[in-house]
Image (cartoon, rainbow, N blue to C red; front, side, top):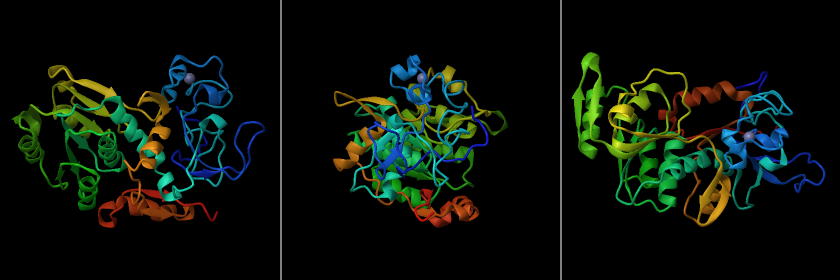
Amino acid sequence: MTSFPAVLGHENVAMIETAGKDVGWSVGQRVCVEPSLSCVVRGIDPACSSCQAGHFALCENAGVSGRFPRGLMLGLNAFTGGSWAPMFVAHHSQLHAVPDDLPDEQAVLIDPMACALHGVMRRFPGDHATVLVVGGGILGLGVVACLRALGCTARVTAVARHAFQTRWFERLGADQVIQWSRKRSTTERYDDIAQCVGGRRVDGRFGNCGFIGGFDTVYDCVGSGASLTDSFKWTRARGTTVVLGTSSITLLDSTPVWAKELDVVGANGRQLEHWEGQRLHTYRVLLELVREGRLSLDGLLTHTVHPSEYSKAFRLISSRGQRDLTKLAFDLRDA
Ligand SMILES: [Zn+2]
């Protein structure tokens, strides 16, 4: 669902360079652009049922029709361009004003943090629930931060690969962090989970492991076949697996979905949320949590690189464990 040539980049903070007439925005305003290319953006009227419900990321027209080519969002579309370039185009309905006191380094995290927030709001755990967060990237860290920002009192365990991720998880409010190196075997990892939440590993053939018991809610913030396989297995019978990580065509063991009667909940992007009696875009809920001091984005962006040094950027990301790299952004402010 992409059109080419496409300039990548959908997470952004930007300055309006040119504005249309009577759209309510003016040159020089600092904004975050919600990347979904949904019905209103595409000039489709009446909007599809998903857009009418405020579920812009689920738009039924984003991949197929409207005033520009297919492509679900900014960065995957030949007409709009993407935020890795000095300029891109957006519809005024996509714009969200950035508060003056929020630095660019934090504002650029609004989109990924909103995706984490949306996942948490898709399925909020009960007060005494056991919760597992799989994945130590910005989504996983964001899930822990958003759970606590929304007042979650559940026992939250997180899985990390690197020491700096463990420190971040603890700082953001995880009760327990399990840190695994790549050398940790499947049986050892499953035993670690058993020790953490109760339950037990069941050995299968060919090195495969099953798991009896597990967490009430598991947030999978990776989306790979391996992580989904583990997340399903580590969810207790009739528990919930929330899938936030970008998933793809992959090989996975879906047995627990059937055998344990799991609820599998997808969480894609940002939408209109029900929050404290209001209907607000996920970005606005997030900004409100930041304004109230319930959530901090400070320090989560650890690296910035000019796009001309893109090869350095990829080198940094591939050695994130040695660099304490939580999140990297392209910095075009001097471009
Ligand atoms: Zn739509």
